[in-house]
Figure (cartoon, rainbow, N blue to C red):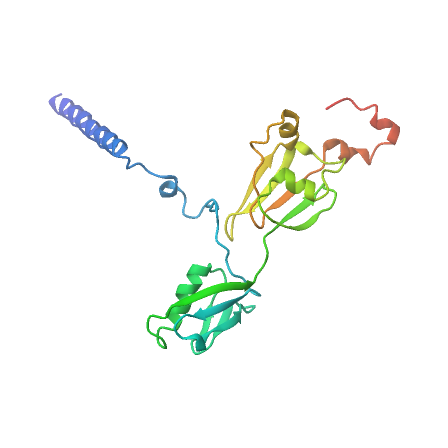
Amino acid sequence: MKQVLLAVLVLIWTSNLVGQDKLAATSSGSVPTASATQDKNGPTFSERYPRYKLRPGDSFDVAFELTPEFNQTVTVQPDGFVALREAGDVYANGLTVPELTEKVRTAYSHVLANARISILLKDFEKPYFIADGQVGKPGKYDLRGDTTVIQAVAMAGGFTTAAKHSQVVLYRRVNDDWIEAKLLNVKEMENSHNLSEDMHLKPGDMIFVPKSKLSKIQQFLPSYGVNMLPPF
């Protein structure tokens, strides 16, 4: 009996210590963050203001402040590499300008000591979005300035008569393996005159407008039968 009582007392004492540790961690602000608890293999949300990443076909100027004789214009090849004069090949695909600058500086470290290098994008893929499904003019559009989903639909010719305004889908690539999908009820936003949930587009986003139920069955009914259908 004494052993059981002792075990219970030890358990209570241990629980109190754990509770105190949790309270101390919380009060000091040292609490787990979403990134700390997130599955390493799961998706991570896009940056709010992502930097442009180079891809094959892009070209840029490499300027050497103190040694202009090394100045050059290079193009990212289909395999992702660029050929640098006196430094050889460097893999540039998927790098941002700051990352590429550091990599080029490292590549020239055996030729120049403490080289002061700047890189300026010259020809690159312009920001765009894609509108597909039940819009007047599906296709690829330049993304110029701040554009929302509703504005993008208008740019693509607006909704067709077969569109389901309440289930517009915004697809956004999170990384090479994951795509985030967001369902938007544009019909409700327009009817309530509240556009607070109208999302702003990012380069590469795709908007898909599905067909409504009525448009899917209209092709199987005579035209006079549509007026006889009950309201949804």
